[in-house]
Length: 145
Ligand SMILES: Nc1ncnc2c1ncn2[C@@H]1O[C@H](COP(=O)(O)OP(=O)(O)OP(=O)(O)O)[C@@H](O)[C@H]1O
Image 1: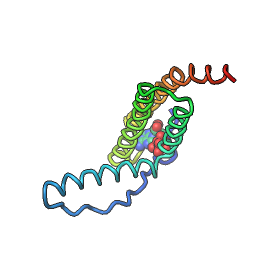
Image 2 (image 1 turned 120 degrees about the horizontal axis):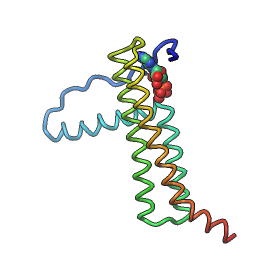
Image 3 (image 1 turned 135 degrees about the horizontal axis):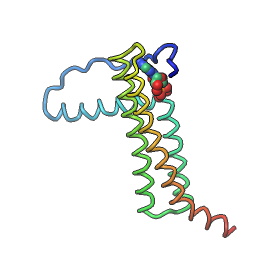
């Protein structure tokens, strides 16, 4: 088992402590703000999340160019969201592990590796879905040229 030379240090979040919102509405609105801060943290610190964002944009443009159906778009968006959600939970696990086990620990390794494996499963499923949806459209597009 190879040990990391120094376990990864999570990027310090540049998020100032929230001041407690007053009304129920203010709390509700603030919760959206916190969620967007989390989304921005994942996109700005995780290279894989940015790669997923680029692939998701390309898949959407390809869907428009190939005029895939609404149902096919819905399936593509579900696949895209699945990969993003897996990547964000992977980030959560990495941060929790780094917080609780900054030194090397076999269980920390397993936790991080399993979380990364979940992202891999969702990405492989997205590739299969992409092949099933775009494959026939691309075939028609190419064969009619
Ligand atoms: N505290 C630790 N104890 C044991 N092994 C660790 C520890 N931290 C990291 N590792 C091992 O190193 C690997 C890489 O860890 P790291 O935190 O850099 O994840 P990563 O997938 O490279 O992160 P990112 O998605 O941010 O690039 C983990 O999958 C795990 O095998």
